[in-house]
Length: 339
Image (cartoon, rainbow, N blue to C red; front, side, top):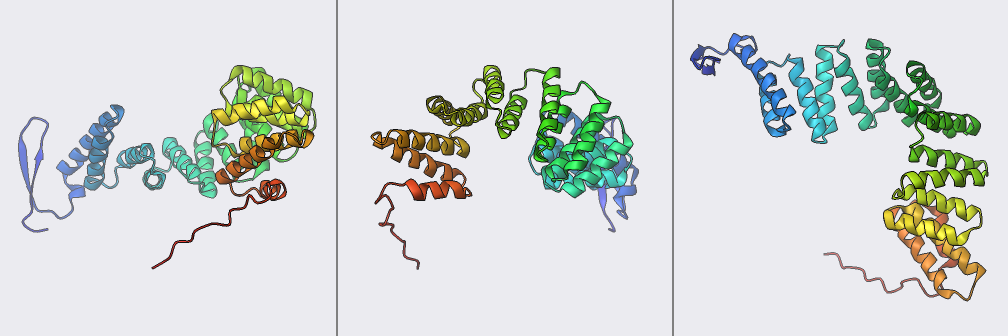
């Protein structure tokens, strides 16, 4: 651009005029300013001044598009802002500029995983693991990515590799148990869950998973004990009460099942499974005591609430059709006229 004049502030407070704008990426002052912008952007980011950091790093990229640190910093900012697509694009550019950087590959993989782009995430995690073969978090994330994608054999292999790297890592055993459970290898799953709990007994979600697997084997007494431990550790965890409600229902302890389902609903009113289970329990109580007429409508109301939260429940729809009181269908729906 002919006749273009720019002024750049120097560290000593002086200004210098630069005439001619052939390509500012190669101007020494622009390069200096781009590195200063990165440094300032990092300072703003550490201070949680996100918008200021965004401004500086965008300026750095404009001044020097090959500045990998600026792209990575922008990726971190967009991640904090919840724009994972924009974050992935920035991390991908940082990786393109520096393919051997573990942090860039790892961050890119995390964004792809958040976006459910599992093939891309796996490739990025594999690259990260190649760069740092003994990095536990990268290996665990790779395994969980395979797990989410339904590639259970690969997931199990990498969970086991993570366990080799860190034999005392409770999370690796817990996730391994979940993968085995998905393959219906229940004894292997129970073994893995117990290994996890030996390393960290204070894991309510692992106890719930263990109980769920035990229920699948109809080992209700053991499942009940596991859920009691989960509730003792986390009494306000709705999922623990929902699972205990189901276990008690299978044990034919309807009053106790109802109590736990009601607790789950109180703790998490948006849990469709809890509303569905509470409805089934109340309907079972009604069928045992038909004089308790109100229980029938209460059960159907619970199922309606469950379906409002998750319409994709054909079994619950069938129960509503079967047990809804006569004349309860609404035939007075008003349709709005369209122009």
